[in-house]
Amino acid sequence: MTRILATADVEFRIALRNRWVAIAVALMALFSLVLSAAGSSATGTIGADRLSVVVASLTSLAVYLVPLVALLMSFDAIAGEVERGTLPLLLTYPVSRVEVLFGKLLAHLAILTLAVAVDYGIAAAAAFWGDSAAGAGLGALWRLMWSSVLLGATFLGVGYAASALARRPSGAAGLAIGLWLGLIVLYDLGLLSAIVADKGGVFTTKVFPLALLANPADAFRLFNLAASQATSAAAGVSGAATAVPIWASLTSIVFWPFAALGLATAAFRRVTP
Amino acid sequence: MTLTLNSLTKTYGAQVVLREVSLAVAAGERVALLGHNGAGKSTLMKIILGLIPFDKGTLQVMGSAAGSAAARRHVAYLPENAAFHPALTGVEQMHHYLALRGEKASLAMGLLDRVGLASAANRRIGTYSKGMRQRVGLAQTLIGAPKLLVLDEPTSGLDPVSRRDFYKLLDGLAADGAAILLSSHALTEVEARTDRIVILSGGVLVAQGTLSSLRHSADLPVTLHITPHLGAEVAVALALPEARSVAGILTLNCAQGDKLRLLARVCDLGAKVADIDVQPPSLEDIYSHFSKRAGQ
Image (cartoon, rainbow over all chains, first blue to last red; front, side, top):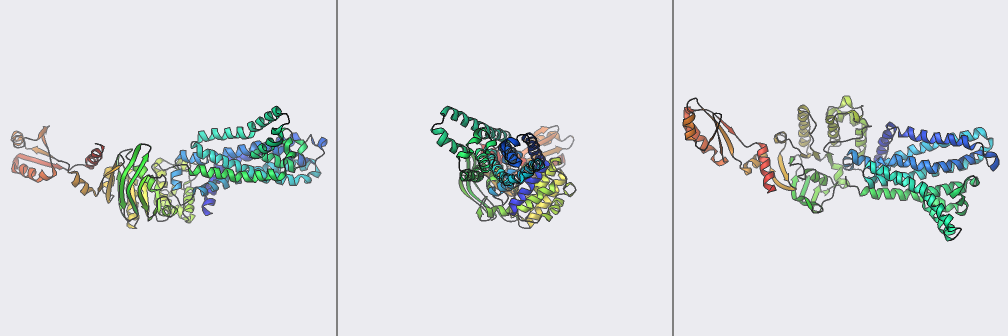
């Protein structure tokens, strides 16, 4: 545990010096401010409290931003050590690779949690400022917060795995962006076009909900939208939120961080310094 | 024995990087590993550290398997071109390494002071020179009284004064019972500072022993330079017909065993000889003799 904490400590310092903490917090805060400003006009027509509406918008935002920030922080984790030549020395110390990985995870997750907390805090403050009944949405906000951290952990793990597999920062960066594009953007587009082609057949009723659960980002969106009162505020793929039971999406978002970190550990073990 | 290797073989595909290498290093012993670039020195060191696997043979570090948690507790490593994260300061980097070995963070300044880095301890490593990074690398090998130090070209990038300080540090560690295995290109440097020399060539251990025993077994010719007195050049040249004359100085090569007989012949010339200079084979000659022999 000392070794994990010591590793987390240096990783946090490095992220602080490299401005990663500032970048992550500023990026997320900026987007949430824009969202709060844009979302404030739609409240009257939906009939939900303003915070719940903000949570629905934040969910669609977090699906893109949390994985992006997580991948940006993690792609260098192992490939960077290989390139700098710091990995061989580190691995001759009495520290296991899992401990190294968890030390990095702890630091990166702390930064992500900080960014998410600031971001959602700003959005919540803005919602309360415009609507005194916004307290009804606090539960949804809290749920969004911890599920965002889980989503972040998943993509940190994915980023570490990419970093270990690529072994070069440039390759790892490309792989990370490719994964983000594939899992977050193209995956949904593919599903949507399949649904259009299927015209309400077996794919739409049986395969589609499973396909959503298999993707950590979609499961995150489903979970938050199904649990919040503002499902109707969401559109597109999110419309399926009602079709999938909440325990299923919850299982998916809890399962994925472990799976991704397992993958990262396995990939890291195969790296010969 | 702190370190024992037996018939260790390592291949990368069809290429044999190390072939049947056997070596033992005892506590308190300083061993220099010599070899060309690509002779397998760094590979051998990384295998000893457990960083890369080997194919055949046995390897034990302090009675444990190389790279096992037990072995890593006792082994310190200084990589060739020691590198650290440029955003950390020297003292922060030392704190991390101390924590990984379960030592107190408060020891960091003392260790940096021992390698002459105390004044730069709070600067980022990104601003350090190569020699300063090398010293951070050296400082981290001193953590927790290691039983085996594996040092890959430890003095590269150090100025002559720092090199002397470095070997003084090593002497202290060896006196405390640490076994030291270091690689180097600077032959004259390891000559006086190590107990034993091991020569690797093309992945094969071609020779090991003290410098004098290597010198003996190489049996390289001794060179004599003889300066005749003015006017006696012709007489000396006639008396030593096998000599080559360059700018009035006669040069002779002879086997170790013939050295005294030849010297006696030169002494017989008496006053005709102004000066005589006996040159034993240099360390470079001995080294290339062993590395070349393996290449054939």
